[in-house]
Structure formats: structure tokens, C-alpha cells
Image (cartoon, rainbow, N blue to C red; front, side, top):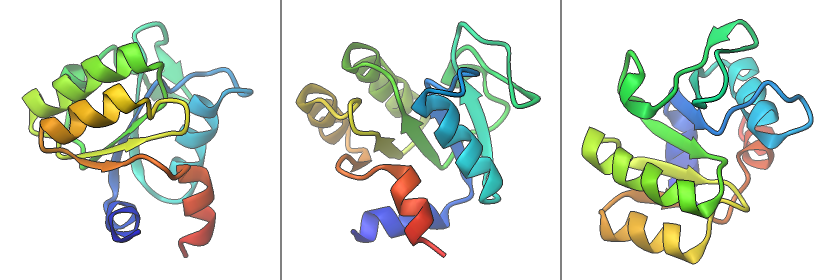
Amino acid sequence: MKQVEAMLQMKNWVVVGATDNTEKFGYKIFKALKEAGYSVYPVNPGITEILGDKCYPALKDLPVVPEVVNVVVPPKVGEQIMNNCSELGIENVWLQPGANAASVVALAQKLGLNVVEQNCVLVELRNHK
């Protein structure tokens, strides 16, 4: 639980799998982090803008190195994201339910990343005041 609290203290986030589809978690998470006062960047190669913010095709395209990467993508994509985080020196990853396949968690741990894998950031943001 300490890991959850530690990551929520960090203010510079990315949502990989952010979307402009208001029904999807990628949208809800991005919006909730933004509204909670976080500096948050959306990453999704298929989208150019979400809530007026530029959406980036990949982590390497971001103007900053984020403190936390929130992952809302299928496990096959998630594994690649773990490798990208490691290459870019990003240490903290938050795997949303559904993105937290054992293969992704195992790779993240092997790469030495700090991983939150059992918690939904939407729930934790509500509890974190």
C-alpha cells in the first residue's frame, strides 16, 4: 500500500492507452488525474488530442520524463511499455486491472520497476485526499 501512496504523491503522470472515448477507462483515468491537479500526458498512437491536450504517439515522444506511467492497454502492448519505461529511465508503473497480466508484472519486476498491480487509480484517487 505504501507504493500506492508514494506514487499518488508524485505529480507528473502519463496514461498509456488514454482515449477520447468517454466510456473507456483510458479517458476516465486521464480526466480524473487532470481534475485532481496532476500534470498528466496522454499516450495513444491513434489519437491526436484528449480534453484539449496533445496526445503523444509513444512515451519517447513526451516533452518530459514522467514520474509515473499508468497503463491501460492489453498485456501484449503492456510488455512493450515496460521495456520502454526501462529504456527511458521511468521507474514507476501503475498497471490498471486488465493491464496487470502476470507476464507484464513479471517483466516489470525483472526490469527493476516499481509496480502497482492490484489497485485502480480511480478508486485510490477517491481515497487519497
